[in-house]
Amino acid sequence: MKVTSLELPEVLLIEPRVFPDQRGYFFELYQAERYAELGVPGRFVQDNLSFSRQGVVRGLHYQLKQPQGKLVMVLAGEVYDVVVDIRRGSPRFGRWVANRLSADNHRQLYIPPGFAHGFAVVSDTALFLYKCTDYYNPGDEYGILWNDPALNIPWPVAQAVMSSKDLTYPPLHQAPASQLPEYERG
Image (cartoon, rainbow, N blue to C red):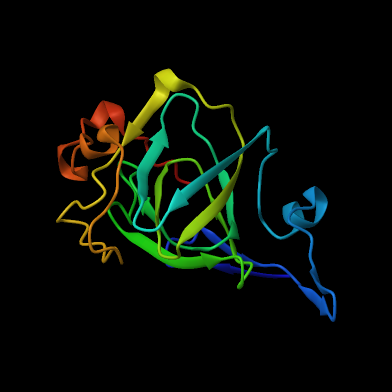
C-alpha cells in the first residue's frame, strides 16, 4: 500500500495494493492496524454510502461540534473529489486539493476533521463510500459554497445537479468565524 501526503499534508492519498488475476481482482478496503501504522488515525464508527448520477455535486460539507474524519473511496464509477482547509488560523486556510477517485484506480482519501469535503460525479453514476470517525449529527451540518469564486475550484461539470441546501451555503470568506473549526498546532 502506498500513502502520500498531499499539498494539504494532513490529507492522505491511499493507493491499496491490488491483486489482479484472470477472475478479476482483490484488495483490502480497510484494515485497522495497517492503516494506523501508515498514519490514518482514528477509529471508524459509521459507514455511509451515496449513489449519484453524472453531474451531481455534493458538498462542500463539514461538521463542527462532532467533526468527522473520513476515509472515502469510490466503489463504482468515478468522481472528482475536493478537500478544502477551512480551519481558522491554519497556514493553508482556503487552500484545496482535488483527486480523481474511481473504481478503476482504487484510490482512497483520508480527510481529517476540520476540512470541508465534496465531490462531483464524472461517470454515468457513482457509488461512494465514506468511513467516518464520528456519528452523523443532522443538527451539526455546515458547508461552504461549492463554487466559491475565491476558491476557484475547476469543477468538471457543465451544469451541477445539487441539493437546495448545498446551494445556500456561504462562500468561505462569508462564513461566520464561530461556524468554522479552529486550527490546532501540533
